[in-house]
Picture 1 (cartoon, rainbow, N blue to C red):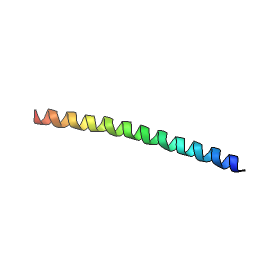
Picture 2: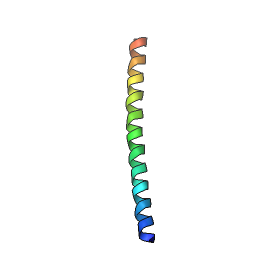
Picture 3: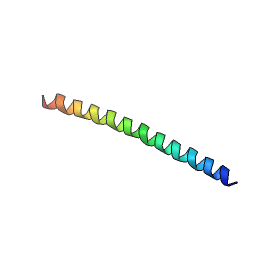
Length: 43
């Protein structure tokens, strides 16, 4: 029973890390797009 809980916890933590990485990449991309638009408007 304890093994099942440990496996579930490790899967959850791995999925959470993956989701955070994906969200971080998307945030970086959107920030780059916003910066490009701002530089186009200014320049």
